Length: 187
Image (cartoon, rainbow, N blue to C red; front, top):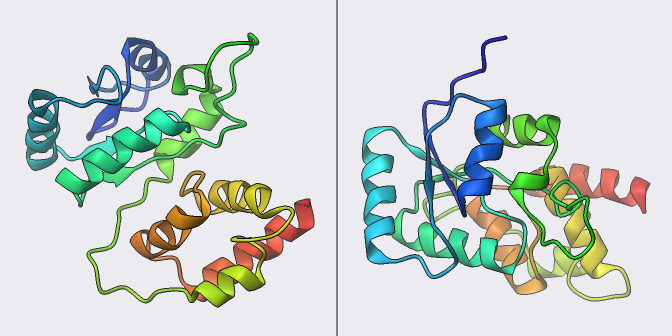
């Protein structure tokens, strides 16, 4: 069976991620080789964005989010694909979360649902709305944010990052309301 070709270059953390993606798609990657992205790697990513476009596809953990943030600052119009922490969980105990552990279906789904951050003057969802949904404070706030991130395909965020990520990915109040309805059903 022929693999689907992805035109954009996928930015991943390491060779295991590249190997895993190549099992599912015909794809080219740039490996950051860790969360401390050097200038040379950033220049490669900038060039890739200019020529073919890039999709940032990092692990749903602290290092992956740090890489994503660094790239977003340098290349604000890069696209992003997200895996939930559950989808990136390793089979072996003691291993870290990673793209390389995701199923074919999870990888296909993530790369078919890429999102591009907003430019800047997008409508913001009020902090009070997030409080009302129990996303910022309360007993299950962390779990609600994790499930909301999965539902909206924006990845896991802490309370501080949530407002920024919702704005960045142009999530409307209506989309938030619908996603939270689904989240509430699963709690």
